[in-house]
Length: 150
Ligand code: ASC
Image (tube, rainbow, N blue to C red; front, side, top):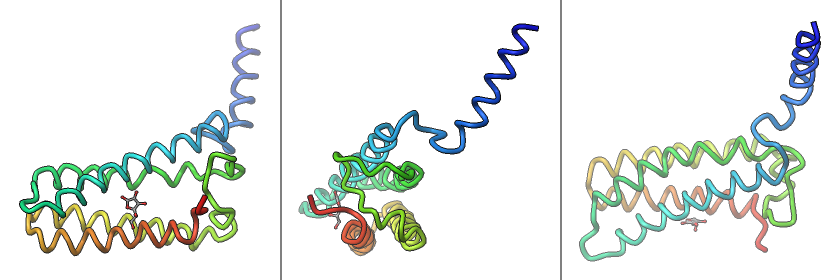
């Protein structure tokens, strides 16, 4: 009987606390999650850039990073939970006041990095450069609108 009561209380507690910050214990965890994902995206985007600047780009390096960037591009957005504009976050309030616009910018980036991955698989450096430039434009566009400068 006692364990049944505990179980019932536990489930009731879970039902109340789950919707708000389901995947994150506290706002700091959400900020850390999205900043980690963005750091990895930036790192692999940078590796591709490094290759595209080289005299003889290493297409395999580009391919592995482009595949990762496509996968990683799906990660940051669930972590923009409400009330996670902390001092160490550059997230602008517009993320939450203009949610549709933010979502559209995220989807634009995801579509562009999917195209970059496709171009990388094709191995044509000129096509990769064009797709990389488009993808970079979507990063910049979203940062201009939704990331504070400092
Ligand atoms: C990166 C990075 C960004 C974008 C942006 C593209 O590698 O860290 O924020 O690309 O500079 O314009």
